[in-house]
Length: 125
Image 1 (cartoon, one colour):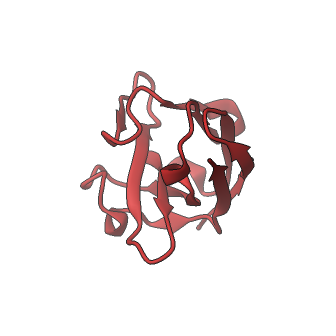
Image 2: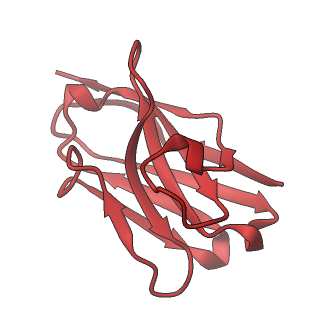
């Protein structure tokens, strides 16, 4: 089992920045990649970004956040970060950290084996 705990959400004005953190514990050696998803009220959970955990692993972003978000990892701390800049009101959502143990289809929530509890990000206009 892998446990994921997110932190760093909050209320920010449009144009501001936030950094989300996701700390993993448990059988972290079984993880192949980690990612971030978000879910706004009344909407489906959508992919934000993902990174492969192996050395030299690639990163992939949703078009909606490309150029404004950066996913990074600290393997020694088993932590993944999502740096968000130039935030917009439409970025308001609960942000979830997720981990998968295989390559899979990175943008599908069903490809992920483990999920955090979520952290709220609210961007005011």
